[in-house]
Amino acid sequence: MSFGVLARAAGMGRVAPVVMSLTTFAGSAQFAAVAVLGAGGSAVTAVVAALLLNSRYGPIGLSIAPSLRGNGAARFVQSQLVVDESWAVANLGGGRFDGRMLIGAGLCIYVAWLAGTIAGVAGGDFIGDPAKLGLDAAFPALFLALLAPQLAHRRALVAAVAGGVIALALVPVARAGVPIVAASAAALVGWRRR
Amino acid sequence: MNAPWAAVLLIGCGTIAIKAAGTVIVGGKDLPPRVMGLFEALAPALLAALVATQVFGGDRELVIDARTPGIAVAVIAVWLRAPVLVTVGLAAGATATARLVV
Image (cartoon, rainbow over all chains, first blue to last red; front, side, top):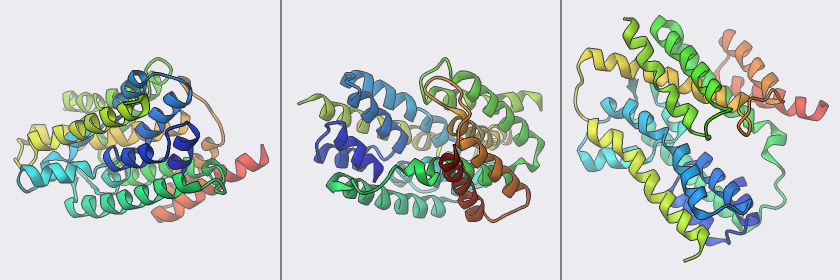
């Protein structure tokens, strides 16, 4: 919902934000694009920022790939339902993912995201800043809660620590999104140690 | 076509392609154990990176703000094996409270 409100405030009109939620379905990239456009940045800058942010879905898509069944078309549809949250709740640990959980969670989030965007665009000016409710801490807390049970294995722990350190180290020097992609290299660190 | 629409269409197509790439290429096949080991470590690495950047990430800088007490509370809650929803609620509450106080 906050996306719809922000996008309208950034001068995107009413229809473009909704189409964006329909096709892009990746909150952080959409916010980034709107932020760039709202600050007077060019369309090219907005596209580069958003796609860099979404490049994390490359390794994320790879991580779920072995767990997905079905033909190419079915896997394609499933892959589109991947967002940080649906991916995280479908994560069973040990490199396995629950395909049905991914679809269920993905669809729920998709519908909610779309409805929220429409509501926001239609005039959600009464809604306060989501940060006031602490919602910006809710997602990392969710990810942490989902990460914790996986840390029983030493390899996973090493990968998690390395991934977090790599990401934090890159935040000051790299565009948003890049630190997450680079953190996937941490999986390699653990691999070599074995 | 104006700039927002061009951006919307390009970002949409690009994102669909990125999301599809990994799954369509690799999906449905069983992988050798050594490669599976790589995938096993990928999820924790990415999750940890998401947590770290969403808590401390600013605009090209690391910041300690109201999100920090939120995640600290979440760490304690996870340590005490609180249910996921309780953990998330406590973290949001702690961050909201910190914003009110400061």
